[in-house]
Image (cartoon, rainbow over all chains, first blue to last red; front, side, top):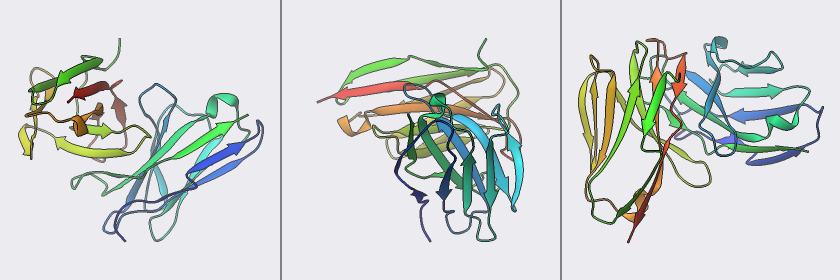
Length: 113
Length: 110
């Protein structure tokens, strides 16, 4: 599989709800990183998954959690959604060291109302 | 103080001009990435640098580890180069700690 696919592309949720975002991994990559980009700001690193384990985390609360599957695809779960969680969520696949570069998905735009 | 700073924040250029975007940082890094983000959010990874210089088409990226500085150059700029360019620090060899620059918004006018 070439490229990284994220789903859904757009999503509207109500405050307090839970959301699951999905990300495929490019063929040959075993690591997926997730980023949050609020409107008008740069991306912020949420966490990274390698071999189905969390392998690094940015400054995000525990209600942001993830999974990685044996095929290296990944999910980002956010519980108890807050209005400030409204953002573009990007994922990128790579090898562990990123030596062959990162391939980004097109993102999921989440709106919390 | 931000660990990574980009300049300029905004840049408008005429088509054909040579463009330079700068990234300065204050921490030890394993590698530095340059990303391109188009309107709508899609991100393309342009370069990953740990030393020296890399070239891809009209894009050139350089890094000086001693001076903690990197530059992204675009030669013969074109309107399709209009995007936000983001400098990203990778702090560890395993790539699990990142600092993102705030980005440089480039507009190339025909």
